[in-house]
Image (tube, rainbow, N blue to C red; front, side, top):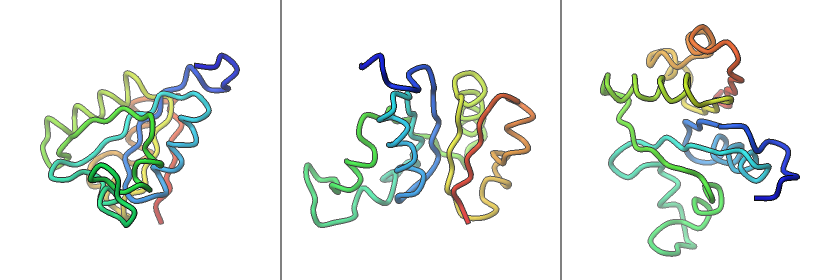
Length: 129
C-alpha cells in the first residue's frame, strides 16, 4: 500500500447494508484503513443482488462499494456471534460504522453508549435514520 495514505493504521468495523455504511467504509478503505464488513448469513448484504449490471453473480454496485474489504459472516440473533462482534470491535476497531434501522443496534447492545463504555476510544458512526 501507499505509505502516503492518511489512515493506514485504522481498522473499521462496518455493520451495514445497501449503500450508506458500505460507501463510508469504502472511502475509509481507499484512504488506507483496514475495513471489516459484517454480513448476515443467508445471502449477506441485500445489495449483492441489486442490478443489472451483474458480474460474477454479484451486483457491480456491491462489488464497487465493498472492494478491498475483509468479510465476516455473523448471525447477530445468536449470542455467541453477537459477543464475537463485540470482541472484534473492542479488540481491533478504531471506528465502528453502522446504518441499521432505528432501534436495531439498541436491541443488540451495539449502540454508541454500550460500545463506548466498552471501548472509550472508539469512533462510533451512526448513519441510520
